[in-house]
Image (cartoon, rainbow, N blue to C red; front, side, top):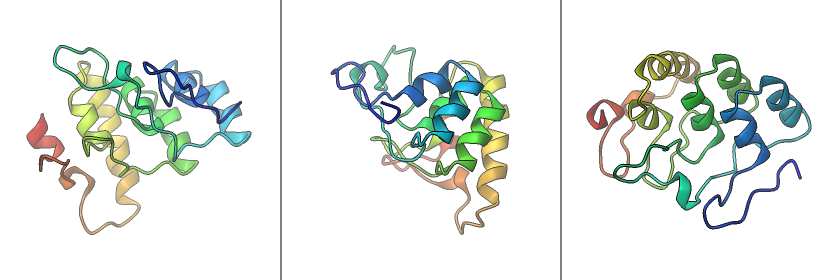
Length: 144
């Protein structure tokens, strides 16, 4: 059940790890990861989590973007250490940085961006993470 996603139309793809991350339950996140919880593959595609005009919840699809939106730096690092990609893109091509610039709490978003940019820089990619465009050709800065 650790890796089992929800299958309802509204919450399609949500795993126990998504829930533990967004609730900032660091002990449960650690427990799920140590028991084989997948940080890289699960994607939330349910209607409840889709970006829409007037919508209040947009955490992306990936566990790292959920962690970044929650803003717990220990959980963000734990998820990256367990193999989550800082460059994963959702159905709109948005990376975790795109998702963070759309969050209402800019303080949490900026702290998460700083941490994720530092962790991504360790990978020595030719294109900096903040220059990766979404499917509309927008970088996180342009989207903001």
